[in-house]
Length: 122
Image (cartoon, rainbow, N blue to C red; front, side, top):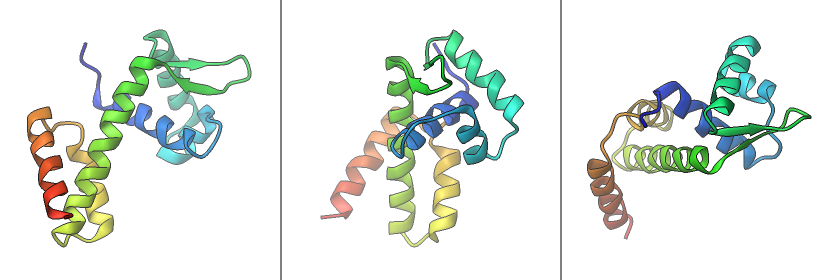
C-alpha cells in the first residue's frame, strides 16, 4: 500500500515527538504549524488505517506499520541532512532539502547514499 507524503510527515513527527515524551494532537499541530482541526482529521484517518492508536486520554502512539514507515522516513531525513551538511550545505537548508527528498528518493538510491556516508565518515 502506498502512503501519501503528508501521512509520512505526520508519522515521522509523531516518532520524533515520542522521543521527548507523550504525544497528543496539540503537540503535532504545534510542531507542524498546522491547525488543530486539520491535525485532528488526519490523526483520526491514520488511526482508521491502523498506523497509530489514540488512547482514551488522547495519547497517540505508533502502531507497528506506522512505526516502520516513521523510522524509514526519519532515517532518510537524518542521513540526507548529514550528507548535505558534510558537502557544505548550510544546516538549515540541508534540513529543508532532506525533508523534501526523503519522501521521493528510491530505496536503491538511498541505500547507496547511506553506504557513501559511512565511507565518507571514516
